[in-house]
Length: 155
Image (cartoon, rainbow, N blue to C red; front, top):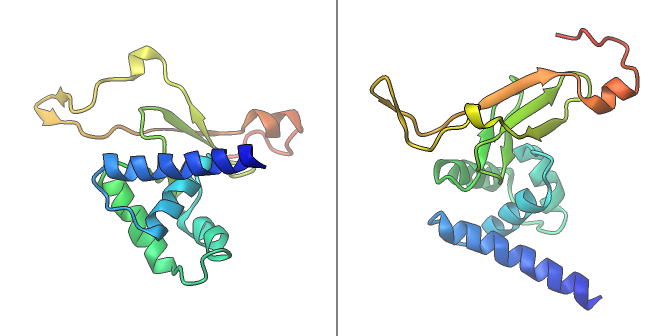
């Protein structure tokens, strides 16, 4: 039991450190939301985060979750993923990497990029200062392919 408590405490410390690193004042709600993003690598939506956290935090509002995630994204503490035109998802991993959306099951996966596709932050291209790069791929994930999806040609 002590090992689980120690791991949980370390996760909360990691969340606090991430907030402080990105110049965000830690609060109970912000720590909980960052902790959720760090420990749930599923690229959750604001609604998913609210549903999960509101069980243990009845005073948490959807507005707080949305505003906090917007703050995280604007301060570089999380990525706002707009790969799906119907919802916005979030990722605590702010390193340069790609995202893959399965058009069959709807899951979003992290993909590593070949070295040629990555570039240092804040590079100038044709006179423009690049501050953010997004790589999105869409298709059918390997799990759905293994299940023998009905339509592997889904748009």
